[in-house]
Picture: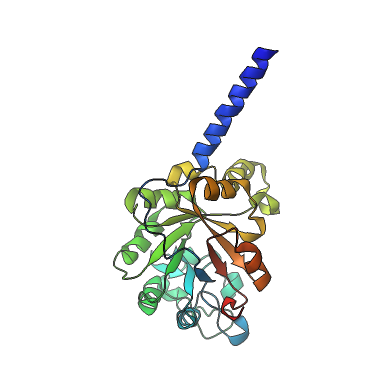
Length: 280
């Protein structure tokens, strides 16, 4: 009986050590994170649909700069391999068009109107020219698979950008690409409580989603910070990363003063929309 107990205890210790190794963020050679601490990132720009300013649009980015907020935005590739700023992989919600972003050239996408306004899908290069280092950027790299061409194309533009920025992605392979090709850039793993959402409960998705929502793929990319859904900030892996290793946490998406107040003690940066935190 004692031998069985000892073996079980040893197994538990081994599994715990393995778990800690898997969730560990970057420990050595961390880049400067001072611009990240306490930062307020306007989610997809400081948009306001009621005022005709759609998400991820040039006026939303101008408004964020004018208000003094940092900017979170999304980058993916057009059919002809041009980085454009758009959140969804499909066009329907924001433009009413069929198909996916990657089904159209950048020129074609530039003719699609956002949310029934006169504003169109911007090129990433145009957004960089607009911001021009006036405020820090949090660039979400959008990639569903293993093709990392979007990383190469976005990085080519960002290497010549004279401003502060960091990158994040739900896809750990994006962060792995940055770990290998541009390690000095601050990188963050986006995550969520995926298994609370019905679309992720398919048998083939359960294990990868379980690993992703608990940051158990961090060993691949060793992120510098975790960006987590603020509704599920109690996630034990996220809390351990922050408390045990000093890894930073960003809360998304803060949608009210109450959300902000609740998240503030537990996170280091905040991604917000639907309200103006400067008026609190």
